[in-house]
Image 1 (cartoon, rainbow, N blue to C red):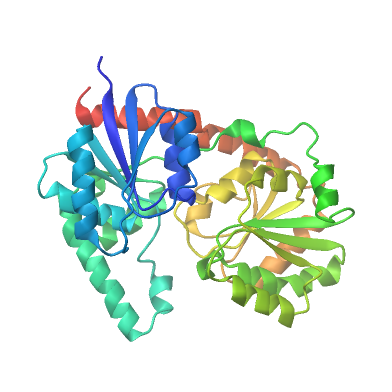
Image 2: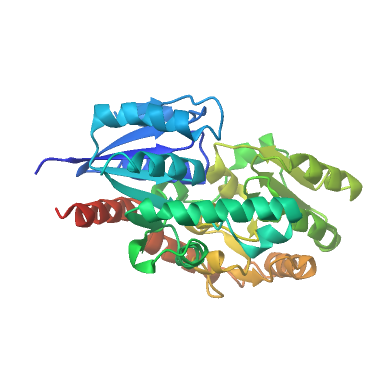
Length: 380
């Protein structure tokens, strides 16, 4: 059987959750040929593609909203590659591929990976910003009619996006993000060299891994720290991630005099090692797509304390994590203190979390599911 070609179109190949997930999935394809296109600058993931012999194109479109230039450059790639399916991910890439669909009768898939139109997001906007966001939502809903099929990374996002864009749920299939389970296995669960390097000897380590943006809830976590420090003076919170909320988080850390207790690590490539040396993983997000960092903590067999948002609850429950009410700083602090005090009695939770994650989020199985989905679409 001749292999079919899938053209993946992304905003960038810079390494955020959605882009990295698709790259890691595509390099495992056995029945299809993946080709990648990134519209804007950002190429941190290209070495992975090169290592696995996957072709990619960088369009280097100069302005983020210049969809017409992006469509013209993507058209040139389309003519060269003649893909059987175009699969785009994230709003700008979706907009560009929908423009291309006007001219070419190629099967078009868009990904649903986050809840762009969450009511909490609108509450943070002023009137003018809110109107602009509703206009974006209307544009999204109208142009979504050109899309043949959608793949959502969670049931929560499937339901939210289908309502927000008036898309039939029959056109949406849920396929979870995957992770390489072997990267999160350790026999002794220690990383003494890294602990010494980071000055964490004899420290009780809390870890949060997320982009530094408001909806990830790190401000709540920092605000909960005085209560946690009071009961556990040897605690140290590590926050791994980058983003435009960094300055505000640093300011709050200084205000609460938590410099000795909280460290912002920036973007890290050694998250499995950080998980290995941590004692408790804390995930404070207000809304997600599918929380990849939480899945990694599950695979690393960590004791997890997380918010009760539906996206998290698709991954964990009370048998695999300790749950707090989203946005409730006191409840978060109390639950973290409970986890620290009772860690030995709670050792079944991490074991259950890892078992669930291996069953639901093994990237090898996810890659197979993607290929089966493409086969069904193409009638193979």
